[in-house]
Image 1 (cartoon, rainbow, N blue to C red):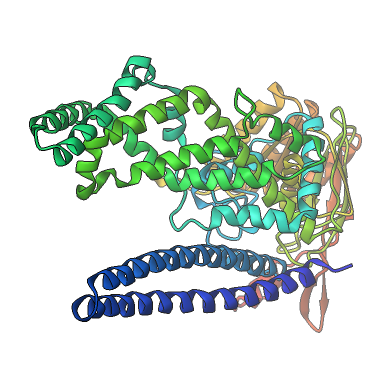
Image 2: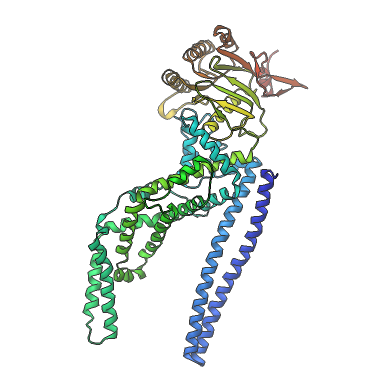
Length: 600
């Protein structure tokens, strides 16, 4: 069986060959249409002037028809070339991700950074070198937001997570379909903006344009005016005032409604996005899926008459294309003669009345699929990672061979945090791995609650609210010191432990902004209080005296540590978690490494 790397390399080679052939075809067609146009026009002119005017006009007509066919053919191959180019880039990016080169990906999710969030900043969920940068493949506005939501607002139901796991497994093995689905959004040249405006526009419709009298009048007036115009040219006795009067009446009707222009412009502004949603939904609706989660998503796609969502959006996309020419000055006369804007408004209001209220649901379906496709990458690339078991009640976390998903070849550890001994106190020297372990547990919990596999051989957890206090800094704008900022974070954790009960906290070097005596006393009081209310979590510290809490708490608080060793006077770490209090220190060694002279 081929591994992910072999499959990616094989697909890259395949699409590279297709791209080369398509590029050659596009170039040939481009040259052919130019040659045909100039040669045809020259021949037609020559024959018209020297031989036969009818023959010259015939050659010109043939040239125009052939040129148009070549243009359409060229556009078709050009579109396919762009699509294959996007697929090639998707597979190239997948190979980079597998090789650990994902930190160069442009979408870091930096716009989602929120210092006020309970844990996202401490766990590197967004920004450079983040979890979002590693896995995100969503291109639509709502797709990115959906992935962000799953990472920051975990599901509260284990059953919903299990359904999502099955959907992720199914999408993971459907590699070709998943990448083609992603390519539909990647083919757009401009970023896809928030669809809120078009969704709100679709929810309300103007019944004026749906009245039978208005519809009949809008259809009849252009026919009458154009009929009089034709009669004027064919019958000498017909006055020009008849078509002119019809033209003036239609011009007044057309320019009377300013609000109409805003409505039409709103649709046209989103025509690229509408086209993307149409193509993505078409790929989804024409595919058969087995998982309950994906089947449920499909059930919400039809309109009230049972018509497929992508067909309804295709109709809206077609209307957007019809509106495209209304800003052209040359189109103004046609617009007046046909009441083009009115015809478009009738069609749009009819579409909104029938399908408008479903547009938001359809867009959200695409967003969910993009989020699932992003998480499916993890399972396909790391099939040895486990899907977590979501257990009932407040039973804690049990992990075997757990590592950090963003660190290649990270050292793995076993971990057990249970209700009866729910707090781990982690000691160890500098750079030994304490903070990394806290982040490892936290980020794997985030993945577990999102429905994704985790970096572990086995992982089980109950539903817990995550809180952290790890990276704290001054806020000069709000005149807040780092110590006070830390107090605010800890206050939030304490308050949540009293109200919610089922929380999981991560504390790195508690009260590091104050003196050692106050830090020791404050940390001891805090940990005791969190243990007393039944909160679970992990605390890293250099304060070895806190190790007494294990005995005082009757093992509700347990001691673990990391250690270092020296070879040829060089410091080394194995990053393995061991029970008990740390017995080694390396601060003076590191101070000497920095070039500071220390009196022995």
